[in-house]
Length: 194
Image (cartoon, rainbow, N blue to C red; front, top):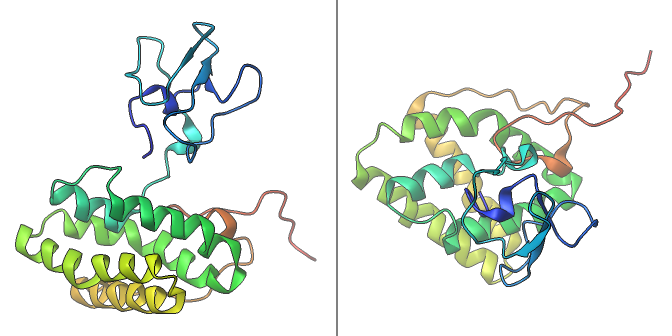
């Protein structure tokens, strides 16, 4: 998560005095306002005794990639994780045609991550080099379809490896604009048609 255990992930931290919650994608060089201490702080400053973790950030993980990077000792703010988070936010969540990919990730991502946690480092490193690094390269080269194809290949390989089955039907209630975090989201104000 962005600014884990730092001011930028605290409920008391806002972008400016009175403006609302701090945008976690903003630069770490931009000060925010602490409603508790009534003073300005950088989002990367260490949290204090009044720290209260923002609930809206609790599902910001990319479960598979976060687990892989964690096992290999990479920071939660490493280039691979930040690139994939940006891609999810800026591309996948902006187009309904990617709802199926996001929904599948929300359902199988946490299960795959649990299995990865038990794997040897050499296996996890192979996933990193075979799939994640090429996906990030495609994203940086603005090759969206190639990045998605490689991601689908990774997910299918890991589902096969762990015997995970998945029903591809995306529920009408699924909120793809906030999906891909490893937690199924439901559209706000969704009403069933009778």
